[in-house]
Image (cartoon, rainbow, N blue to C red):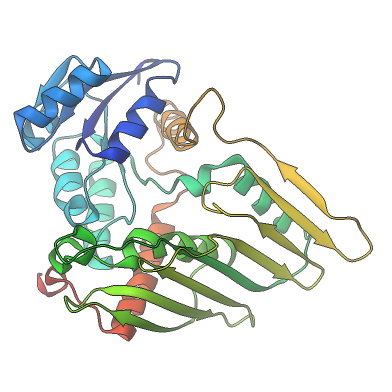
Length: 333
């Protein structure tokens, strides 16, 4: 791939805008096209960010020979359709989280990307954050011994009315896929796929989860206590405790700027590495990983491996099974 990587942005919502603003500050990159389901939305987004081409359909973006890689920023209910369209057209893809609605859809996308020899990555920006990478290095070096517990939560207060997408079962609504994916992915990063999954939840009249608690267990004896909510503003913190110490993340653990290491016989040690800088949101780290992988002709990222994304989706499926949440897409195929 040439030094300048040419991006297409598929969808025009808030997360697409934040991502594009960060991307335009990256060296040796160019956002050459944007697509929406309507010409009006695509043209307004293109004008806002100075993007030369605007398409009123996803297929036009996928067919554009000047696009090297596509960022899929739709709601997760459309991730499979949009990502498959781009992969089938020969485009590399960075797809927002949650990766898909269920593990079956995720397996289909991974199989397609591997069959076509194309790069595919879930946009789990937490994994690419330098503070989180410092965390995993410390744990690998034995800084806190063997992990025994992981605690993490992500809740927002709402309220969200019955017409909001977070209450729409057909759109994969609920707290779990929008917010719960973060604490689940955090636990997976540290411990891998759990051997046991327990969960309980408050469901909406539409049948989506509003408030969910999860208890994951591993044969090692480690446990993870996780929660997510769209009815309560939770602390949004995380803590990892091992046999020799503990690491605490303050509010915003999923895009952290610091954490504190506690070890017996030592003063607390603070580790920092401001993830944004220059007014950026922190998405530049996942963007840099995509660029690095593409220039190295890699089809998967070691920071956000596809097998890891599949494992997270299996855990999310298991949680939904236990709390009784099913999406229409679960019955397809």
